[in-house]
Image (cartoon, one colour):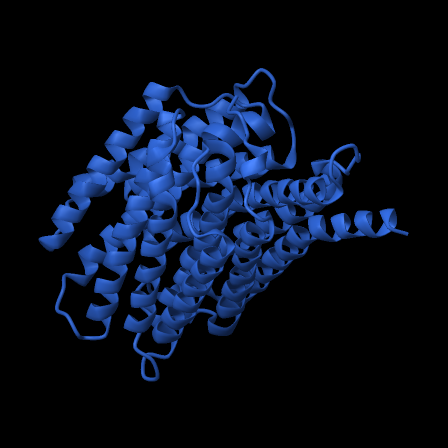
Length: 414
């Protein structure tokens, strides 16, 4: 079990800001799908679709990944994060302003060039790397954990760079192989950045919160090697304007291994805790496994695979983790404010299981409706409403730990 360094935890307000912002972007994504309806699901190249995808990948997943990293690195890895609260707030502003400008550029290209958003987002990812990589390189121990996080941050930089190039191509300022570079952009972002970071973090989260065993170190190291070699091959081929069919098939394998391996490690654990996070992760792994099988078989279509990965599978994993992190942040905050000798409410009291169960049920319902809407596009607005309500529930639940903590402080001072 990884030793936690509680004294090094950042000010809880900082990671909480990112995690609650993520939920708000999820709400916005639902509103976009409601407003655009069938247009958002008609083609992966439409402005409405690109706006929806980036609200989920950069707004929701991006904020969640940033917030989790700022909390996780000092506490679980012992790696210092430069700049403190001020730099983190600048990072939050750059990321969210960049997402807003990029989405506006896709949604209303006649009014705003998406290159502005792409450029700002590259600056945000460069700042993230500058804040976290020096401390990560100086930290000791937990080699596979540090290696996985470092590779994921590097993949994020590649993703942001490709994103800016694609925005320039979208605007007609550059002539690039847009189709193949889009595949590379998606691969590096979803597999290299998000999946790579989740795989690394799971080595700590799964044993601590669920009682599951982590993946064997050698197996995880081999998985990382295969994943990033395949992504380098994808980038090389994309720059030449081609994405071979064998490479598309091969890239489905790391996702399949991650999903099936995650299910195997959870369901095979001797002391598995049947807590909401376990159900969030089992559901997320199952959805990613389905998406990987469809990708491997060349079935289902890009829109279905994208919906399963971007709008359903990854959000289930990230939302479950975010709920646990926010409850943990609330507990740390109470410990610091009340001092030693005061018995403060535990994590499970600050974030009751019933709140998590409600969020899980709404996300599962939204996921089902989204999958149906890909096939029956007249359901798009209904699926958008379900997505909006699911992320609204997440936002309320994420604020619940702080509200209960404030109530505890108020009752003590009466």
